[in-house]
Image (cartoon, rainbow, N blue to C red; front, top):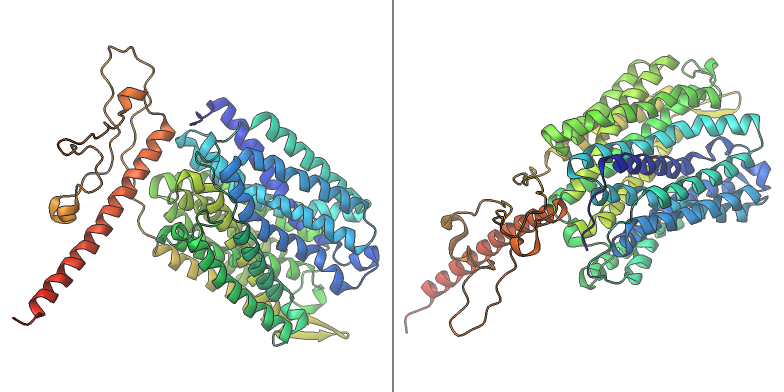
Length: 571
């Protein structure tokens, strides 16, 4: 069943609710950062063990996000967003009540399950809003993720400094309940799959195992040693499991991730750019926060407290929201490819600004704002590129996979920057600290990765825009002439498509003596809705591509047969 888009008035409420959901979901990832130094004392465990409080959220979120996205396509995105709010609440309550390591890790793992709400919300916008509002809404929703991360740090630092640490988790539980209630009241139901498939459990476990091996090896390689058997075994196992998982996904009827869709140039290259942008975004966060907090006596540290450092970086999160409307207008005028390209270059400019203004807190604030502006442009463009290349029935799983690519980029960034800062150090008062050379090297690496992301964006295929559909007409009496069918892509000439130009037409006359059911015309079923028109245009574009590919194949086969006949010796 096709669900009509809500009215513009309700659309504003939908976007606001989903943006709040994105902020709360991203907030969970930075919630415990101010407590890192205190966790060994609070949980009566070693520093190495308490680091799992952060790692487990990243691991569970990365593994669960593709599965939750697929379930959103199968059973409806609103339904799965409500389901995701339950572990967010439960995990926060478990963490607030915990006094030891194991319950805290379990609670943080439950919070990781709720991270899948973010790509579900982005995908739901396509189902719930009129087409002209989808672009700006996606940009705002994407920027909300950065706002949660940027604002969460000073807020959690202030709470940890002036109140009991458990207040952090009780507050996150209250926010999660609020988000669930708002989704229940204000977000309409989204359509589920017309032909409901099955969840690929083997694919889910296979992808989960590969991601656990990869992210564990990357995140713990610095502690265990990059040449240790455990690290190498995990990374090698990740490669092997990924290959086996890919073979399975290509054979199963209802795959967790449609790799054939993912292999389309626009989707594939966007995911590659997502890894690089995720890397570039996280490198800036790691470096700038450390420079702000290192002692001023070093000559390059700025001596700020955790709270002060978070406040210096807070404007960068607001900058992401400020540029969301600009990114939407740029995407509407030049396409999301242009927004992604400009965003990557702006991120690189942010690193250049940081290299020149490292000696001042206000300089790093400016550098953070510049870099975050680029992240806002890029993050708003990537979901638009993905959803413009996949069927409506696969938007949630495709966006979830794109979110996973960004998570992989941030995890690899943490490992790479950690190695650089661990190798380029100075010793002061018996303490080993990253050197200024190490920080400048890390900034140059982030700048280089951002430039590579821009170059990858240039290889994206040009988005072919179909003719704009005519406005939806009101219901007319039966005597009114039927509206003209929606204009699709112009048919290719015979010299382009060759003899196969009519192979996929459904209006060919039936052979004599054979019944050929007459295709249903729009006049018989009423005026097409905007969603149906968009879907029809997409199907026609896919049909045209398939016809061209088949024609190339048949031409090649014809040339081969002709050559074979010419080479055959005369009998």
